[in-house]
Length: 125
Image (cartoon, rainbow, N blue to C red; front, side, top):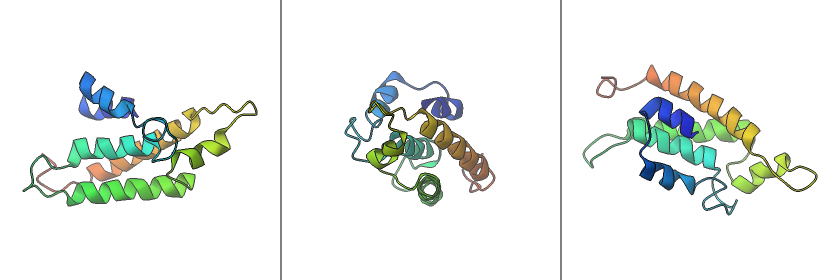
């Protein structure tokens, strides 16, 4: 998902890379919280459409983040890391989230394409 972030936002600051690195594996690698791909999508939506001051309207970003969560849940059946990992577990106990992240990335790009046509006028410029 970092690739999507860089595609949409340009090269990411190294500090931002460090911040987002802790969301992979369900917050600090615990596998107990939100999937890192889901979290990354919310962070990218915030970077693209979120507010930068209290007076700004963030409703578009909120709706888009909620829609991202809904689509992710509909596609994968869960938002929690461990529940998502279980079907990906190999016989030796190892887990690769690559297929899930690839599918999530495609879903997310589709959502961003749709959102671009629905931007409020102030954010369209």
